[in-house]
Length: 176
Image 1 (cartoon, rainbow, N blue to C red):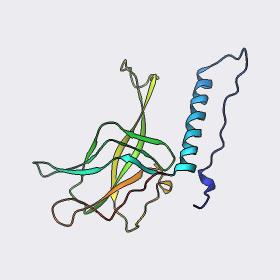
Image 2: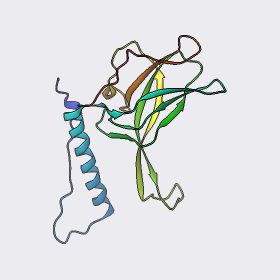
Image 3: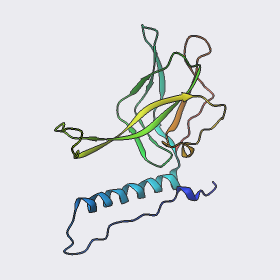
Image 4: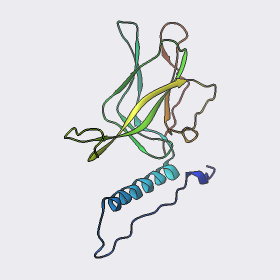
């Protein structure tokens, strides 16, 4: 594998000492250090792609619409972030396209058990995944590292007539 220096980040960690007054910024910096360190490890040693699960299925609905269903599983995105899908994800496919590539994207959102107002600081962050799709390109491989969102392609769909079909020649990347 060719070395890509753009995958490296300079890690900066907090330094602790007896009597140091700890602030929220210190704890955030510690969390950021741990996350960036793990993501860099994943990028450099494991690459990106599906680790387990994340099978893609299609569901035709009575109204003529079609949904893509992604089963639970685990993957690494192009930045090394862990994508964990606990429950199946679904998204409606557009009716005006003929070829689509299905992507799985890492997302995080603030959450609070008390359902506080959005302008206040939430006490938790939830990391999850989102299914997105784009018109297919003729390239055989799609590198997540070239995408701004680092999403990973997990399937390619074709619609030669009225029904969507999985492209059996498409193989999603596998993390090592």
